[in-house]
Image 1 (spheres, rainbow, N blue to C red):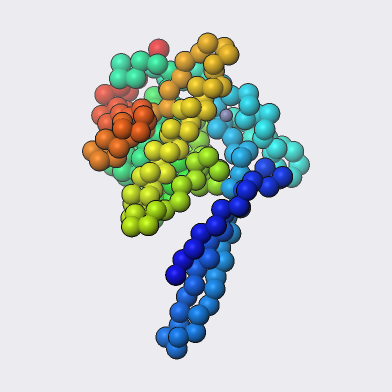
Image 2 (cartoon, protein in one colour):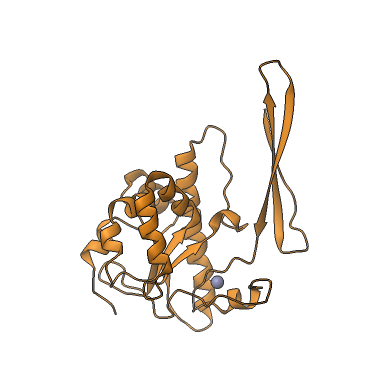
Amino acid sequence: MTSFKRSLADSHGSSELSSKVFLRSSKGKCTKIVRELYLRHDIPCSSRLCTRCLADTKGDSYGRIRPFVLSPSPPVNDTIKVPHYIVPDTNIFLHCMDVLEHATITDVIVLQTVLDEVRARSLPLYNRLRALVASEEKRFYVFHNEFRSETYVRREPEETINDRNDRAVRRGVQWYHEHLKEAVKDSGGNIAVVMVSNDKGNLEKGKREGVICCSSTYPMLNIGQRG
Ligand SMILES: [Zn+2]
């Protein structure tokens, strides 16, 4: 038996999500395990277009704030004609790492859900992805969507882990897009956050949910173009 409980946001900028899992041993004894997850409201988007996250970010225990990663002049190309950041799904990292490593592919959001899936599927590709994240010029940013309250999604009954993770990716992209639209509203700027996937089902669901999507042809067809 499993039950979930979500509490109200507390006064420290985080919400608590706890799950109780009851395990029954072979002798019939029941043990209760409680797992707690603290969801935060202050994990930054790390776009240099966003001043709100900069104001909300508390930094480390010394008050040091990591410099924001994503460019204030995001790429533009023939496929996506507005300034944008891309959010590749797991399969794009697994199958198109060479393209993503190309010097002209920059300003990429790596969702934590995707990073974890890449690590589980291929350690060599995970290490190549970590190298991209470590490169200042590439501007690949790991966003901890599983720990931010607006982007965390709970697995539904009957939902597979894969479907739940795909939904978490779509939710992450949708949140990013709305968040950054809000961030540039006053300055009259334009910005889009785009999910890149080669999964037909995921692309169709994304379009239905209002997520801006692009197939895996995106990075390969548009290398080198920048507005
Ligand atoms: Zn922000």
